Length: 302
Image (cartoon, rainbow, N blue to C red; front, top):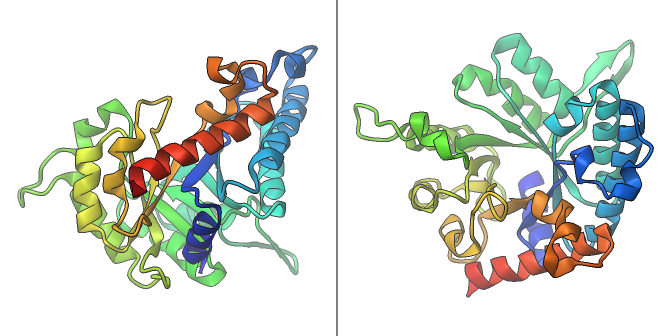
């Protein structure tokens, strides 16, 4: 089961880190940006950059998360870079999450599910447009917006991460509102995620239906961890967004399992930080992953 493979990789690398390949062209070193004046050139440079990052971290990090918005803004050429990044990371043995936060109902949700988790038949041949191990989804349209993703998960051994308590500062404007029952909206969404995942629980006790729970809201994360014992957390917000390792222990079980922490700019742009000054961008990214691993393990297991 895909959630077991993810946890196996985390255990093997001793690293609950996912590298966010939110690759803005402006993040690339100046030498890679010089002379590029169109989307095609930007895509070629992003592909070269992403492949170098993957090569640098594939043996020490279990997973990458590719945020599609950073590629869509470069049009069709950007999507070429997006597709290449997914394929390349997978070919290097890494699990791949697509961060697209897809959200719709009925036939449209089915199309989204096919794009990243399922297959589409053309003639007698079935293909997946952007074949990913996991996909982030927005469940706030309700169960009929989730069912198509669950169907393809079961057919092709895939996983999803559902938005529950997001890392952005204004998430509380909606997610922290209380229902008549006294529960918050994010708590109720968490209960739905537990229910959606009950048929896909692996040997570690976690479901392939995970939850996005921001590192910037540790009090809420602690509530959710207790209420969602079978749900694996994807934890954004570490580093550049202000989340600290010491705040994240509440996201994990007593055995140190239960979540994976994302860092994007802190790794992609590590070569611009004072502590990594003079290092090539890929070497700096690797060292940033090692430093993050040590920071997380100190906090989670210490």
